[in-house]
Image (cartoon, rainbow, N blue to C red; front, top):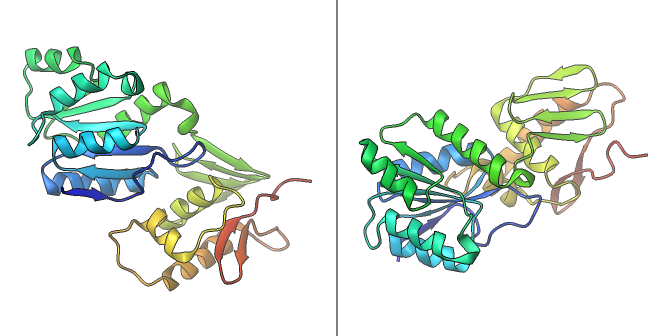
Length: 247
């Protein structure tokens, strides 16, 4: 069995990143999709065969499936048909990928229950937008567009962060780091866990890199006597202070 994971197989509990299963037998495309989804803050799991995907879906139901039409083992079309026949996955959002562009084939894909249909080659930003749009309709509680704590506000759609009336300019990594910590206030993450959650498990970088980026994030977030929302837990790691902004 050749299942590649970028995150734990179990669907995450409420309040954590939406979990997406990418079923694509073209390894380069699967890697590209996983990279971009993780950069958007999603938890990603990959499978390259239809029968492997069915095993993962039987173990735990993700929040959304990106499903290639043509797969070894079991076709994407058949997987989608079976998903719609099961009570647990009847409403599971499915985006189908295919090289077939004819209208009749699109109708066939949608007729078995796919929620959206994307023809290869496609624009990755457009696919990311479709993923978020579909999740907002089907799992609105899992894709909050804004995170707020006290006078700190993070807008995922515009990629802007404000503290009071002040705009805070963050690099892409610091933005993802803040997003990751703010979504889970009070939870302490080790450097290794942050590397997996923010950078991705495939990235091989030193854990001290986390300290560098946390330092940059802190410098951007707090000025003068402003309270630091990032808490260092000695010997354990970092967390977003759950008491930040509370009386």
